[in-house]
Image (cartoon, rainbow, N blue to C red; front, side, top):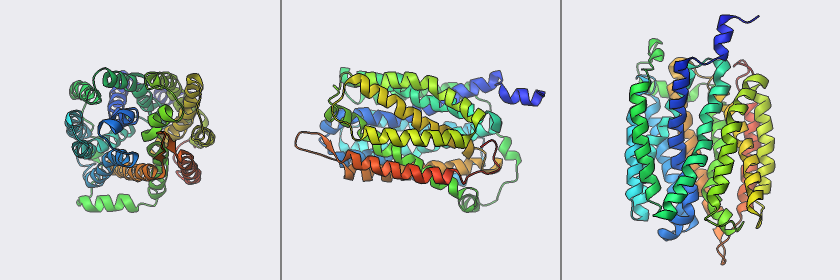
Length: 409
């Protein structure tokens, strides 16, 4: 029998729909900042005269600074209106993006990525905390599916546009355009998002340090933190070198590379919400297992590819991203049920910190595993694939031990 409460848990209110749009946009801008580094890598490496290991350091610089920022903020994350916290860090993120666009040397770009990471690394955790505050557990599969659609939208809109702007002018222009878009988005947040203060009514620990310490030591949190670290590995080991691998090894022209991201992104804009619905309907563990199996198969195929037609790469890319999203969406939905309301900000900040630091380490490791041969091709990329598969199996084991009483699993 359907009750009003059950019905409300299945449908979004007009304000919730507006909030979802805002949160998805914020995720879009933060994810695009990272995603841009992958396709622009083929342009930045020769422009700044750096090698794969140095470029990997540029990617990981954002991650390491974001990780430090997350830990520093975690103790205070539940003491403020989440809207104000969000606007503060989003403003710093936009300024950092401007700096990236103005950088003229490797050293300047490296410092710009550090600055951007200090602010951008916290935004995702605040977004997830707001989502958990404003949406019931029964809705969070769909919520995370829609928020994850920002990942796909960054490919559909951002990456092709970024590649076009960089080929039309230079690699600086996409960052400046993204900063302008972020400034407009910040204005929307100011006027359309209400204060998020429900968590402030719960008892707060007096010491920010103790709040952080208790968040780190909570036995319910530790397995989730470990799984977060492992799930990050795949993206940070594969994505920074994807454009170089496609152009140099798969012999896909740089001019048509945006087509790969565009078609893949369009498909994932459709698939992301469907995966979210499946997570709520069939359970988090089943969908996560499906995603893990698909990801493992596709990573092994992708990292062993030689020259292939464009349409084959597009097809493989779509299936790979379906697998990745089928892991991330149920994991985020599950993780949102673990912390208490008064600890959500700290939990998500620590998770974001672990995600960024582990991703930075993974990027550095991948940069030292792969190298360029005399013809300019990436070698040992298959070894990166084996490492990603290993982390996927361990993450699957951890996921099955999480949240035994946390909603529908």
